Length: 198
Ligand SMILES: Cc1cc2nc3c(=O)[nH]c(=O)nc-3n(C[C@H](O)[C@H](O)[C@H](O)COP(=O)(O)O)c2cc1C
Image 1 (cartoon, rainbow, N blue to C red):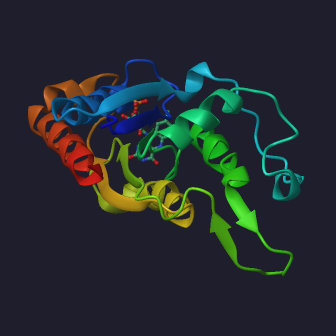
Image 2 (tube, protein in one colour; image 1 turned 90 degrees about the vertical axis):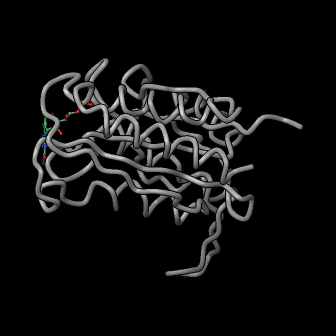
């Protein structure tokens, strides 16, 4: 039987920061039960912002840009599990993560009706996603919309949201390493995601 593939996507511009560290813990947990994982850092890819030309509605793919997304579309299709993590920036995801999410638009299948129903090429395949954020503040309202901004588009694309995970009180680069408890929780959540995908 083929191994379950899980793709981990970090939207942090800060190399080896809290998002990268937590993502590594999630993926280590998934690997511990036999999943094949891959971690990618959006900061290492050139990803243009969607310009809303709507050409992908007919073409079924992005015809405007030939950039880093061409490398990521196949990775997404091949991975039944997806882990998206972004630090909270101004109550929301980072610009890197927003550009990535908007460029998932070619996965939709639209009708000509306005406003019309839509479906997704990724739906009904048992795909599951885990989303997480890291932020400095400890009050939930200081995190703003980050978890919704990560989770809602994935739900629309047909993923079951397996978990929404939050690490508060982390400001400095690598600070999350001091919190063994949250790292352990991330490991366990990654493990559960992989088991849930089997
Ligand atoms: C531009 C910017 C905006 C931020 N906005 C918020 C915020 O709205 N709420 C919050 O709690 N932390 C905020 N932070 C703090 C980061 O979320 C925090 O430092 C996080 O640990 C960074 O994750 P990283 O190490 O993976 O990059 C902000 C940081 C930056 C640089």
